[in-house]
Image (cartoon, rainbow, N blue to C red; front, top):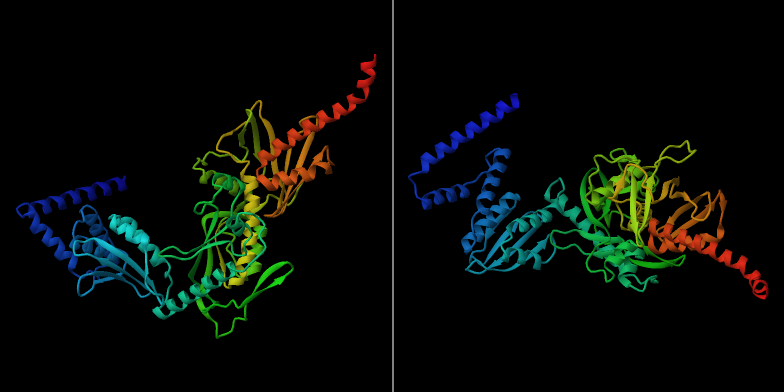
Length: 526
């Protein structure tokens, strides 16, 4: 009730204020009112409170959006508003041919014609030469000022570090050094596995497929692509696999970070090329209140055991308590959220339905508890970023993440937006549950016998997936190689289970033919 009364009072006060403004300016011309607004924009607003200051800037931005930009003065006025909204400085060149947006760590140079047409936009980071940005140029030419403002915000985020200008410069130098080493590591020759060089770089490259930092976009690492994504875009236009952003952020603790490129060479070790780095001494590194991070484009469900492995690789702790949960539940919610499916009413006992060619329907239930296991369910964390302090840690981190992505891809293939709260008649039913740290079991009714069968999927690494087939608790080794090849090729549980069932029917048919064949000549004689 009090909230309603407060809202009513606020509405009445706003209405009264607008009436006073209307009566005050009703006799003034539009040009005179516009002149007053421009005078207000030119006055310094730094003395206002921060909340009032931001409110004023937001109002100015709203006013600017409603105005068409058709002149030099118009675009300069709009750029002034955008600069102030982002907390950046701005000024014009003496001859009015360029407009500058400035900060302590970078600046933009916008080349303008007297008509207001944008010729070029150049971006210069601290210690780097100005580079023409085609993207920012096109945004301003098209008068897409909101998109331009977002890109400007991205540039500012690169330097989102507490401290004075000198500290920011040193931290940015550390980021530049890391990027230089990663680029050099990506260029070392290696033995390819796939005929597609880019796909091979993504899946097997020591630092994945790198895209250098440009404008407000951090360097990106593409490190995993599922077989399904490869089918979606076989020529691999753009980036569509799993992506990491290479960033640096301020921290409460200090870490020793390199401030100049470290990589000197590489060597062969156990059929792999290993990068050689000198020790981190004071000549090439220093203690800084910052840390490198590999940030996920979307949070990744990661098993707790792999989080521990990441921590041992980097020597930096990851807060596991913040998003710790049962792994199967984390994965299901993440997959359904990515597919824009409602998850509020989701039950862990839901049956996920998968439709395959030939009108075949499979039903999957993901059980978080291992039958007969007293250890409890498999736990995991929804990971958003990984801290590290040295470029040589990146290849090992990527191998752990590829391992996790392969595990997630297999289990995610069982999850569908089409689900039911009870078993569906006519569907072939499968139950999936954890087996050990990086393996899980699939139990189902044997397609040719009155018994249960089990397939254990062991994800040894992203490049080695092993399947083991059990019939009535007895191992059927003859099927293992077939299952492993199918799993590795498609990374899909529904496709693999369909192949297994077809294989079982074929084996039974072949055995019946063999049993009948010796009797055929005798029958023909009679």
